[in-house]
Length: 186
Length: 123
Image (cartoon, rainbow over all chains, first blue to last red; front, side, top):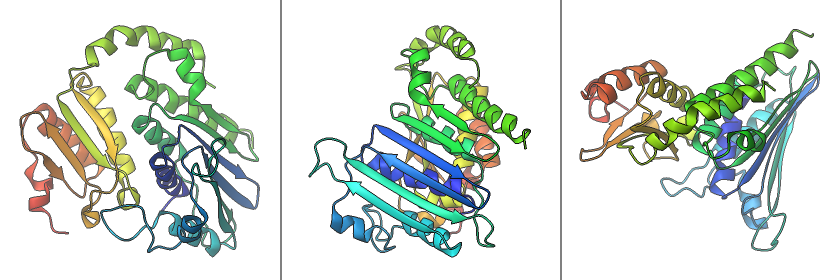
């Protein structure tokens, strides 16, 4: 993938398929590293599946036999000297607090580092396609933080769905304002 | 955060429109959003459709949705158009610009942009 934001869009599709109702996306940047975590409350995975998800020849999809989402991220992280790890509490074993946490760390100064890219578009795309999922987004950066919680927005909107164009436009400019304001502070 | 007051204003403006939008959808535009689609550029295609449909005032009758892998990854980004009473149209190797043309000519004008359809494209 050309941007990490595209990998993140792709990884969250796994959370959606795991029937998550709450998905948290956390990006943390220091001067040297970028890490991100996708945390969901979906059905989780058992140990066997967890051991196989980084294998490109493992997939839950039925249209073909290859699943490249997680292997791509693992490769991109390791190429910079970083890592990917996944932990999970399957709902089959845990009635409460089930779900999956995927974390990847990248070294930004490595020549093979994939830039974060357009996170705003990724968040917009996720909300557009999944207006009933509660998304929380944090991007912690040396130059200042960006934050979005769709639950807060939904409370103001009442019964108006989040994927109405007017609402998406508001979210888009809200996030862009947060990104722009903080880059001026460097 | 931007002002929540602005958001509340949007809610007031949307109230009447929403009831109008519900139930009257007759056309569905479906964008493939699996690994293959995303890597090939489905994100800007999706966002272009969402924007154009709203700009052209078609939101009352057209919905834009996302789906997983359709199984023809070499043709991604793939977009399927379902219109009630008509055969499904599959557009392949889509871009944001192509999406704009599909909205103007097919969705609005009723004429399929046949050069972008799967039958007329090499893998």
